[in-house]
Image (cartoon, rainbow, N blue to C red):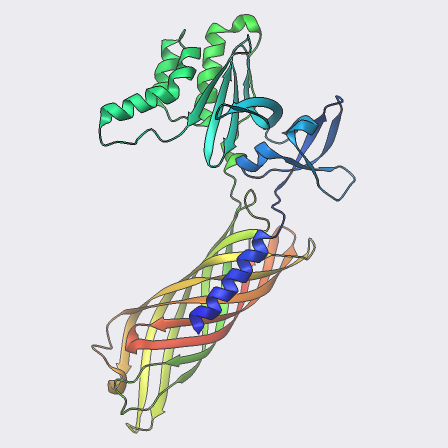
Length: 393
């Protein structure tokens, strides 16, 4: 039942996430087919999405509009200089109108387009001739000679464009075929062999912007309010439950995914707590006590929805695992499967909701969670509601 509850909750959370517009607003401008430049905000998303359409909100307006390659000459981000232009390019031998990322402009120009997880790079000389480099897997065999042949086939057309420079072709062969490496190779080639075409321009390929994952640290405190139930050693013993209120303190990290999912972050939190349980057990007519320290790691997703700039409600779900140490027990023979004094572990899940309250550059986070877990010590189970307070900085 618990697993079903978790599955339904996670499914609802992910469906809600998937149904939202995926927004990473960045200042920029679009260039219309009529020659106008319009300032505003661009939704800077994944490379695949950026090549298919541009979501743009004009300064002074509130709604984003979708533009396709046929409707614009291009668009550009202000802060990083990342630049996309509308081009007709051969994608797997079929001409398609796309937004190509303009990496290098010069005697030899370089463009980038991504589709279905594959990167396409287009080298264009001063006569408009194109060479296509499709960055697909070349290691397809246990035989090194076959893999070298595959790589030569992938790089052949680009190498032909660079054949004047032994250094450039050597770098092409030796280095990974990614945007920053190819931009450097083409720029160096232009500066040596294409000076008659004018100054070479490198439009910023920002690894920092492309891989931007905003991270924020937080300090947290929690109050576990629930039950700890060790499993009896045999049917001759009664069920037994400790009612617990346990404080926890910890530190954590939020990692945003602005180019992939709107208002979604990956959250991780390391929590420390001390458990001290004692209760009379009627069948033994003794106080049964169990004590240990716990270091627990929670990790999951948080999705902010609705709300304004000050108050942002969220839903969250994830898993948790813990390490129990310095375990000690008294009169726990009814629940003992081995040495109860050995260190143990725990694993489970949590779901919850809360509110982020923006306080300038910092955030006060308030949340309530339901959690359930299995504990290896005495084959126990826990379930509880907990109150979570964090200061995010």
